[in-house]
Length: 444
Ligand code: GBH
Image: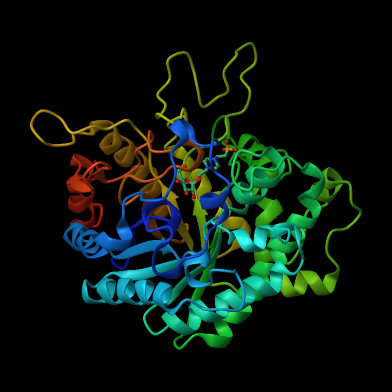
C-alpha cells in the first residue's frame, strides 16, 4: 500500500512571515505591520523577514530541487489592496503573477491561501472582523485575486486558522489586533464564517479554470487513551465538542462543511442561535477538500498526574513547547475524514527548533528528520487504513517570522540567516527530498 502515486507532497509559507518589502511598490499596512510594535519577542517585526519578495526566484529554485509537488503560500491583502477595498495595487498583484509563473515553470502546483492574518490596517480601523461589512470587503478582494491568478492557480484556501486570528486576535489578545474582547466573539464568528461562504462564491464565479476550494483551519484534536471502541468514541466526541473554546474544530468547520452550527458553541457564546437557516446555507458552499493544520494533539488528563496523556516527565517537545505526538496525524485523518467526508489535505505540520549553521557550514537537524519520519509513518498508517488523504504540506519551506515569537522559532527546511539573507538547506531538506522522490518508500 503506502501513498498513492499522485500524492501531493508540499511545503508552505505565509505572506507576512516571509515576504518583507512591507512598504514597497505601494503595499499598504496590515495589522501586523501597524500594531505589533512591542508585542513581538525582542521587538522584532516582519518588515524584512526572509525578503522573499526579492528572493522568490532563488526560493522557487530550492523548491524545485526539493521536488515539491505543491507550494502553499498566501496573498497579502494589503499588498494587493492597500486600503483593503477599492483601489487595486497592480504592482502587488504583479509579484504574485511572477511567483505563480515561476512555480509553473518549475512544475510546482501553487496553492493559495487568501487570508493568512495580516488584515489591512485601514479595515481594522473600521472594526475589522467585528464589522459585518467585512463580508463584502473580503469578497471584493477575493474577486480581484481570483481574476488575477486563476489562470495558473487551481487550489484555493479561503482562511488560515480562524481559531487563531479570531481567538488569539480578539479574545486572548496575543495576536494582532491584540484585543481582549471575548464579548466580540459572536460577531467575529458570524463575520468570519459568512465571509468564507462569500469568498467561495467569488472564487467559483471568477475562476478561469475549475477551482478546488477548501479552508485551512486547525483546532484541538483529542486522542483516545487506547484503541478500544469506547475510548475512540470518547475522543471523537471531545474533538467535535466546544471544549477547546474558540480553538474547537466544529466551531469553525461544521458550518462551512456540514451546514450546521454546534449548539454547545451557541451556549458558550451565550446566544440561542448564531445563524439563521438562510445564513447557514450561505456559509455551506460546496467545497472540494478538507484542509487542516495539524501539529499535535490534546492529551486527556492522566489521573494523579500533573501531565496530560501526550506528556510525561521529560517528554519530547519542540522549541514551541508543543508535544511530539505523531499519532495526531492518524487520528486526525480518521476523525476529520469520517466527519467531513472530503479528502484531507494536511495544510501544515512541522516543528520549530533553534537550528544554527554548524562549524562545517551545514545545518544538521536530526530531530526534525525524526519528527517527520514519525509523523509521516502515522500518515501512511491512515492512508493504509483507507482514509482519503490527498497530501501533506510541511510548515515551513524556510525559517520565517513566527508571529508574536519573532525569529527565535525556526520551522524551515531551509535555514535563513537574517543578517545576510543567505539560505542553507538543512539536513531535513535533503531527507524530505528523498522522501518525495521515493513517494514515502524510504519510511521504515
Ligand atoms: C500555524 O499556527 C500558522 O498557520 C503559521 O502561520 C505558524 O507559523 C505555524 O502554525 C507555526 O506556529 O491542540 O488545542 O493546543 C499554528 C498554531 C498550533 C494552533 C497548535 C493550534 C493546537 C491547539 N496552532 N495549536 S491545541
